[in-house]
Amino acid sequence: MVGMSNPISAVDFFAAKLAHQTDPADLAAARAAGAAPLVLDVRSEAGWSQGRIPGAVHLPGAQVHDGIAALAPDLDTPIVVYCWGPGCDGSTKAAFTLASMGYTRVQELIGGFEYWAREGLAVTTDTGRSRRTPDDLVAPVPVG
Image: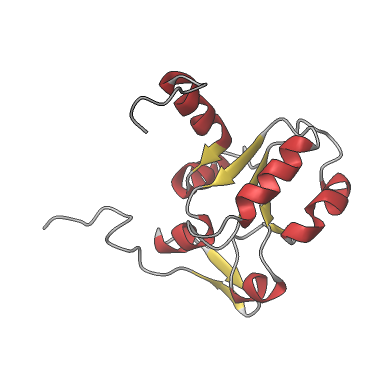
């Protein structure tokens, strides 16, 4: 990478990254403040059934292009997309599809459903709502 020409400055790169990604804590705070975006779960039916962010809408990745207009007819609708976790690029593909269609306020959830659940935020399954104990690696541990 050293010596390679870069078409974008570091400032522009990080500004774009911050504009087009959000993390679980920030999404939870926005929702608590009443500024809830449309949250799209783009995973499979099995993933959706296993657990999801409360209030999310299920729109599998392959259906995003044809199904989004019914959910968000306004291209300025704030939308956050997520899939399983940091190793899954389904949310990146869905965000790309939405942006390519002209949606202007699309963000990808950093870490996806995995990070949401690991931070101890509420999760809904087909059998109800729950929370897990926050993972020490993603949430502050009380010192005592």
